[in-house]
Image (cartoon, rainbow, N blue to C red; front, top):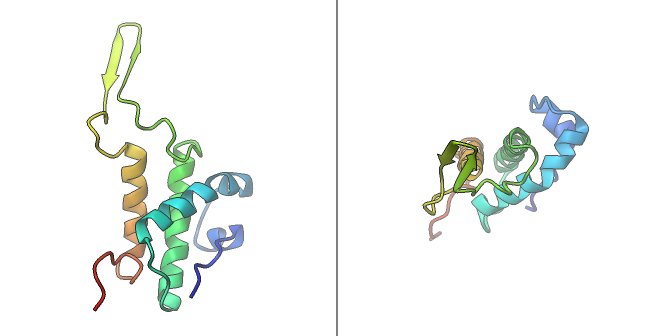
Length: 121
């Protein structure tokens, strides 16, 4: 089964609240993030397809919360403004964007065959 296309209508049916332009601005990054998590897994049944759609919708919301950035600029290790300085995430760990994205995606894929990354027998 191929991966289903996620449309704005599917997004709103899942309870999505973004406008169509905001949805479209985040869709590409969301699909890429979900594909990164599922790897070569493909939907085996309707439940897997639903899980994929929910995961993409959740990822759209995360990307929008980060300004539809696709995570660009989230790996900044430190910033200084005048006397104020902040440091975070520069130790090779995932950025906050990546962590939030993976958590949202995994939450929706839990229980589906799409999240399985092991060896099939």
